[in-house]
Amino acid sequence: MKIEVTKDEKYVLLKISESRLDAIQSPELKAQLLVLKTEGYKNFVLDLSEVEYTDSSGLSAILTANRISKEQGGILVLADLQPQVKKLIEITQLHRVIESFNTVEECIDRVLLFEIESDLGKESE
Image (spheres, rainbow, N blue to C red):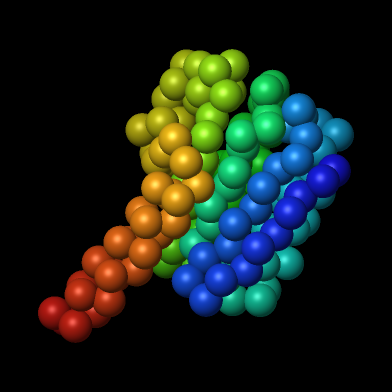
């Protein structure tokens, strides 16, 4: 599986460079997420612009990313969902749990806003 990982101070961008996210590719994505968790990352932007198809294994990998980010006090944001993937995410109601945006830039802005909101919450405690 081709996963381009770009690390930033506040987030990690994972670009899936495959047309499918299924039982063959999902284990590698999950493994990569666990490595990033051990490195201390909590905010993830998952660029799915090239993913035209996903199945339950792919959805499981996305849910794993969401669980890891939430456990660490972070956020997962999905970028550039293709029509088939977007439809499946809506059918499974994942769009109620995981935010998605049209571009990677919008996702990064959402992560940075999340970090500001988190910092403000800590200051008010």
